[in-house]
Picture: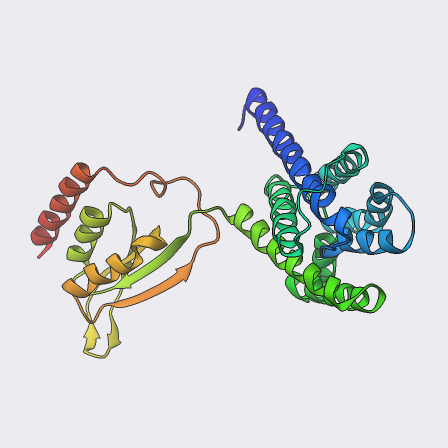
Length: 307
């Protein structure tokens, strides 16, 4: 179990990062989107749309519009996430209320790009630390839980309606720029949540598994998990017992991995799949090459002994 000191440190780290996320999101709203009448998606976009029609402080609108979604969250997600989200949304409202920025640019394209960039970074950091700055994610979770509709589809429909209303109430041009802002926000949010490193999972089935294992360790410096395969049938008929190789590598090494396997066994069966998140192991700290060569040599000798 984690010590009390470790838990306190983790909580402090999470809330500090959420604080950074709030600052970035408030910059995106107050320095770019609000002064130029642009919208984002979700509850934030609804608040911005109402602000263009009624003289109500945007911070009050964010708080009021978030209440129904936070109530939904109480019955859908954990109480800890709801508490963090209340603190985050309240913090964002406070920062927006008191922050004052000069207009940085009047270029509509730059406003959409950089407004979405700051807002997406802020939302992404908040989500990574167990909080939300926009209630539409909670709505998506709630509908998915009750009706089985995917969260992505719920948010998409929500925003299609929002931008359609924007085109009717304000202008088609503002709606189009707001869609661009939303796309940038969504992409940056995903990037912050998933990280800059892009990993790929690979499963390899081959009769020459020992040579492939050694090549992956020696030339890629990547670790792996081995599963014992049983007899089966393929293009070449009955298969004997063998090792099934399962490894995770950086996407940048995927072509090299294919070349390594092809040089050893052109008929190897390879399954490639996306990896959303990884933790621990030797993935981020690749094997030492000298140790890798020794391990590869050991694997080869061990295979000869079995033969």
